[in-house]
Image (cartoon, rainbow, N blue to C red; front, side):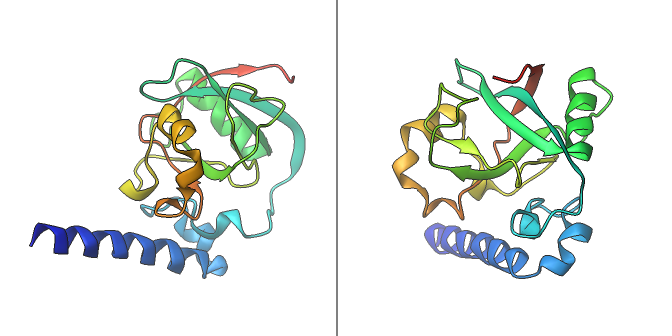
Amino acid sequence: MRRFFTGIGYLAALAVIATTMAAPAQATATTRACSMPFSAQADAPSRATTVEPAYFTMTTVGSRLPFVIKLTDAEKIEHARRIISGKETERTHVLGRIVKTQAPYNPSYGFHLDPNTIDFFQVAIEVCDASLPYVEEHLDEACGAFLPGCFFCPWTSKLVAEVSAP
């Protein structure tokens, strides 16, 4: 019986991902409050102003090396700075879509997050949660049953510092 409900929960999570990705018109309204905050934002054209990129390090439980993210959206850069300063205390965790290639600014990992999909969340569903070391060790499995749609929302993610451009 437990396996039945676990399977139903997994299918429901996938349905949420599919539904939110199919509704870009609703993305702006739902990305702040829903349990899948990145929803269609990853695929929707950005209305925000692109500025000089800013780079931030983040960690998760078990990570020994910092993970560098690149932000190109002025609002998200300011949000990240508020997190680091302690002014933002709600949407403090990092999420985004995994790209399975090493980025020049993130040489310690075999993947990076697409800057156009990075956002911040308070609560997210379990299907996109993992630690940085776990993703690195299972990168070949990511974007299938593990981290469907390549979405990564580590619940223990924490921004550490803003760093200079590489």
